[in-house]
Picture 1 (cartoon, rainbow, N blue to C red):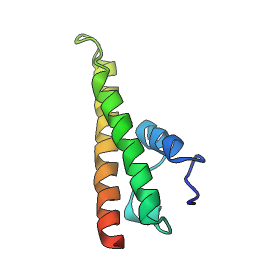
Picture 2: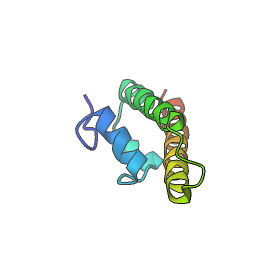
Picture 3: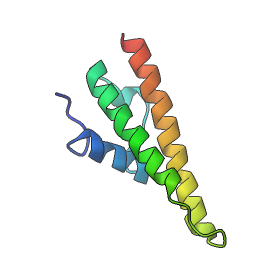
Picture 4: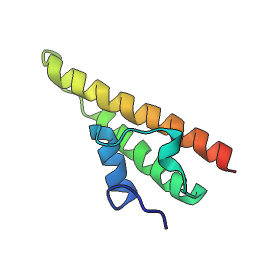
Length: 88
């Protein structure tokens, strides 16, 4: 079992979404393919949840915050996918 930052894959995905954890390939050094797949599942679930919440059109700050979260999660999914591919 991997030592996920935050304790679990769900918590780590949430912290990535909020910007507390910056993701790079070095972040996932020591993680197994199963751990990375669990994290990818949680990132994908969280991304779908964030995309489903639509702030009011006149609230520019909420729109910007939502877009930052989507950007962080999307880029994290790409990094995790690349790490899974190179680990195999």
